[in-house]
Amino acid sequence: MNYTLILEELGKASLFELYRLNAAIGNQLDDPTRIAAVKRALRVGQTLHWFDTAENRLVEAKLLRIKVPHHPKPASRGEAAADKSDAGGDPEPC
Image (cartoon, rainbow, N blue to C red; front, side, top):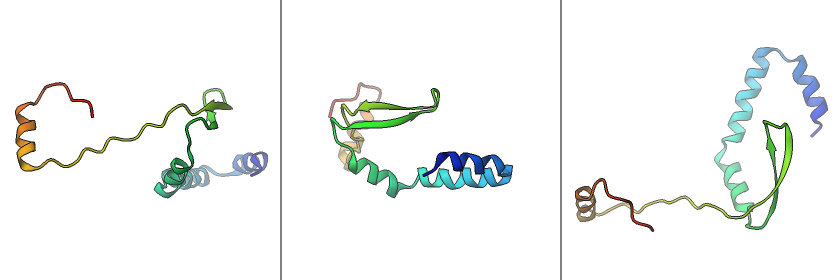
């Protein structure tokens, strides 16, 4: 992708056109299919590049660990009642 050309074209765009592009880019960034594909490609020890917006540059990093989201199992009726009676306590490690 030729970023120089893109930036030149963006400089000519109206605010309305920029708003539409912003919405389209946001939709692509939030696309669950794209996100899942990236997550499947990640491996611990892999060298990655990410864009630091504050410094306006690419940063190289090594992936040290991958956090797996915790999805608790639905509780049965008896477990749900027991959990309610213990409200306010510290969570137990999984």
